[in-house]
Length: 272
Image (tube, rainbow, N blue to C red):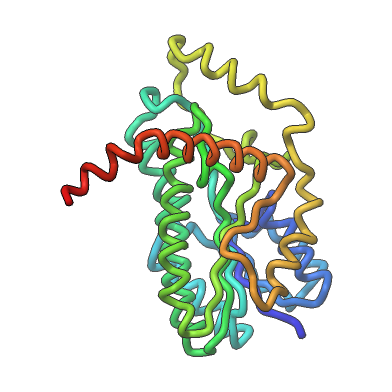
């Protein structure tokens, strides 16, 4: 049975790739982008199966209007994929107020507005699946991506709280946790701070990790996303790519060792 899927950020990268995969198999897609020119090829190929909407997710009123228009066009919204976002590269000290606010506005608040707009529709339907594009960097961190990490950690906390809130209404919630992929997330879509030479070594050490094997192939994510959307019991978190799982496992083992070492101090701080 075909689904109606609302996807933000369909102009390029994961958003466009996944939107086309859904359209190819017969689903209907409400596709948002800042510029509709980026959706012309999909509209030409898939016609009325795609409903293009020009949208800046930072505009809350526009978000609610876009969700309303999409629902009116297709009659329902079965799945939301909150994909819009970008990367901000730079040391925390280097980051301007404008850069930090814009990162949080898009990656966190934009996602929040779309989520809020979709919930009443899914609640009325008594069904739905909200999928938030987070990152492995919403679970563990890299230096030089501190504000990006913070935006995705915020998405994680929001979504983990959301899941039990909406479960009684028949709404499922999932977080997608990709590692690095060969999209333009780190290229044309990225924002970079003005470099401070004091952080050159930290940056150099980080970039030595970025070997060709480090980056997954975006096309390989399609099957995982289709399986997630079709699952009757989807996970709250789904790692995407072979780097994520061992990276998180190693990090959490280190955390547990440190927490265990300080456990007595923690217990004594309770007071009784």
